[in-house]
Length: 179
Image (tube, rainbow, N blue to C red; front, side):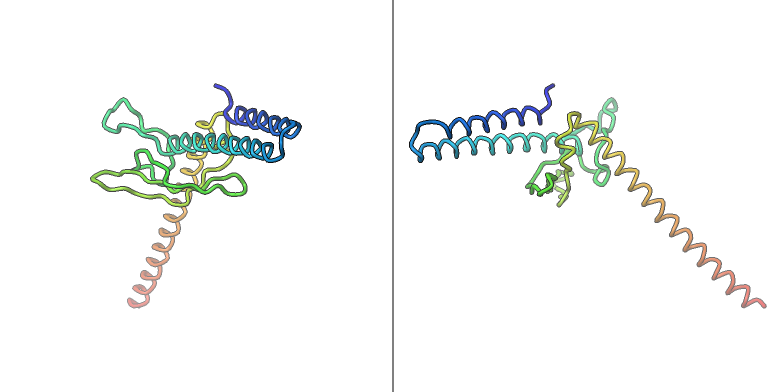
């Protein structure tokens, strides 16, 4: 499979060359400006098409559709924050940031006529431009799952230490009352 980013760059280079060719044509200035605008609009459409396709692919990898009732279908790698109840997602809207990351608002049908939303989810530019998007996104999902697990372990440890301190204080109070 050809690299989608390379294909987009080749198309944009072709359009840039065409724009320069238009500048050298013996046409009235209004016609040259109109042709340049058309080429620019086509370049914007090519960028938007590429971005839309890559965002759809990224969301499908992050929140895949699977049939949990069939035992032969293993639960796929997916984004851990919604992993246990989301089964696929769709993009409601997007915002492209200056650094190339895309902020998306997502929605998933969760059953019984209910949907769940995830707002302000960041899809990194590196994910979108990766030649092997699946490997990059799956690695990010695993890393996020590990970060969440570490945070949960730290919270459990802090809670256990607080319970131990409270038990020591209660024990000291009981021993003081028995003296």
